[in-house]
Length: 341
Image (tube, rainbow, N blue to C red; front, side, top):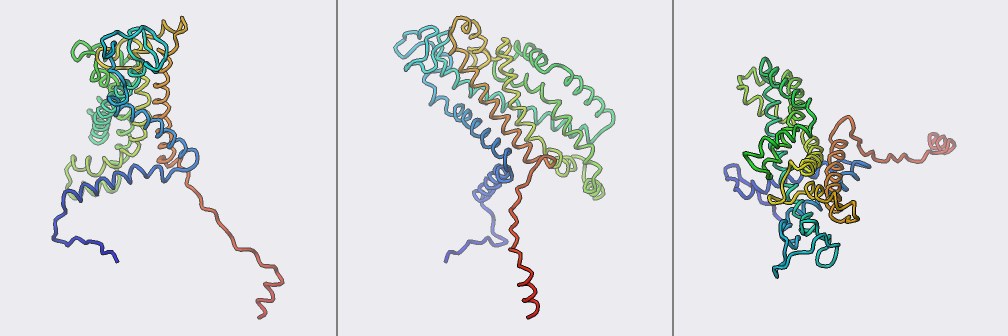
């Protein structure tokens, strides 16, 4: 019989055990939406996870999957690739007008998208959540000023705002991943600010917050310990949907010439811009594959976001109902005979 090891009260917990415990909690938190979902929501979650996971695999293992670098124009023998060559065994997706290998550009583009989306989401969540939490809790003139600034940013067309920020930062930071991530960040900060600020305004009057004030808890402790975990419930859903929107915004910036340039990294929107003239003469592969990659990633992230919304949102959540089996009904004569005995 196996004996389960126990930890004595005075025995210290090793760092390895604490790390395993943290990983187990993280895995359970990630798996919870999949276990709670049902029907269409589960289908959207699984389909979106598969599509998004495919693009993540391309991004992480791009050096192993891509046969060439994103800006490579010649083979190992030093001979330059053919211009606008059709798909073949040497170039699976053909080459474009700059003699880049399209397949390599698509694979390296997945890595660029992942870097920009993760960096922009991290900046957006940190800035938007913290400002919304402080604004909703403190109130007063600070709340009015922050609401006015965020409403002004929200009133701008998001693509125009991203273009303006990208243009202003291009001279200082260059046309690279950081500039693109900051441009996308400015667009989505007002959304997180609004959601967190409204949740904080309603939650700061709750009984547990009043109890924390009564025992003398400082404002920072109340915000970070009691309010933060209760006002960020919808942030994962918003982050997933905004990640899909960020991919489209980044592609639009690249298509208009304000995004990442070809010498900095591979970007699908830039490749689509270079492929516009090719479509009119029947060269379809230079624009079809980057466009298909954008569609796959946007659809995958959107399906994950919608599936999480239907699973985690209490107003949309549908619980699975277990079938109820009733015992067979007895005939009246048998019931009367049984009662007579």
